[in-house]
Length: 436
Image 1 (cartoon, rainbow, N blue to C red):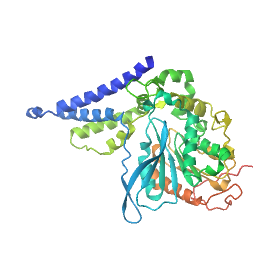
Image 2: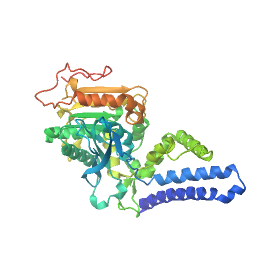
Image 3: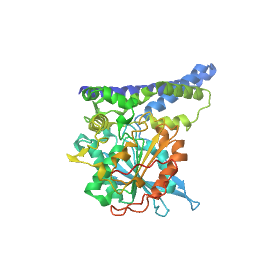
Image 4: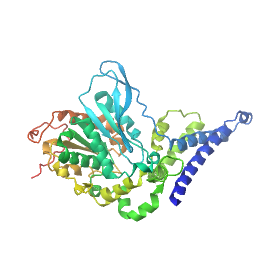
């Protein structure tokens, strides 16, 4: 009951700030103040508008906002978002481009479950749609899932990915962004043993913590300093009575958001100060760069406690993926069993969440994959967000990923692998020595 009251207290604080912003906006915008004009009223109104919108966004799931795309035939095609597989903790969405012939490239974009909704990858999806059929994993907010649905930890997450890959078939190209990279690798290895014909054709891992010990960041340092007991005591709470998941143990989205903001407090403070000033001087707009970013950034979702704690304990502290010791329901998952899936890793030179070296470790783990089917790319000057949604993604990484998919378009069996003389997809690619 104590943690449930804490959860409701956080929601009360959020709701109060939203109300204060709305009140300030309404009061400062009252027409009578025109009789005694003063800059204070414009600043107060601007503060209210920005505050109300910011705190209201924290409990709203953003919309994908992708309604149509231009195609090579010169027409705009409507995009219909379909739920093709629906499960309690996550669904598989398909962005169906109506009136377009089936695309050769079939992409499964694995979204992270790390506090934000899958819509964090909106620009990634939009950039891929003109050139590929796109499916996305849409993870659900834990506060809306009844306790009767049971637990959801990293093993369950991995099995969800296995089911999604089975549904899509062997001509799938998986792109895992950030947090799910190690589990996407584990899901592929699981299929390699259990159902080899269902493995994806290619696997691209972008900025994921395959080996968190490869290079330290604030994230990995925090994981080392705090014990599991301390972590559970500090961040785990029960969902309050307002939601369907009342009583479920979660890592609340609002608490995660506070952690995100604290990492770059000065930058966020300045961004909001500048926005309030622009609003008060009539320079702001409804859909400017600030709102486009923070409408998404502030929209957070709860994670199940078992998923968060098992991620920290097994991926970061226990290094089960890095040391190839991961198990599902007691059965060992051997990453070395992957032999026919082409592997590509992408890292950002200035990534302060998953530093260079953490993701590329996947290539050494995939000892059964020939060197001709392994590729890596380090994007100069790119931070974490830039490698999947920023200009680095649009201008450099996206074309390389599509080339990688095309270069491995032909199915590969364990009896017929690509020869080592295959032309690399880019000059900067670093080929890995084949395992002895």
